[in-house]
Image (cartoon, rainbow, N blue to C red; front, side):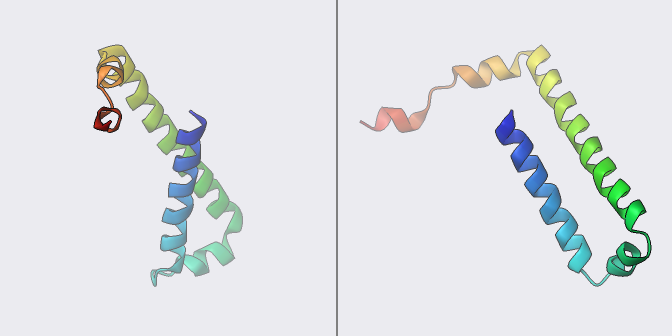
Length: 79
């Protein structure tokens, strides 16, 4: 779960950096309304985390995770 959180945080940092450095005027919005920008970033991250968690719980209830765990690793059969 820790790796999932790290990947999630890195992906949102990359997303916001791309948005910030694009020529869409976001940098002016950041300078004028920093608290709104911080709230928007954190709420977007929370929404994304909730979405990922709902997908994870749904896959767990549906039994998809058990099927994925039963798949053999093809890298181990090379020997």
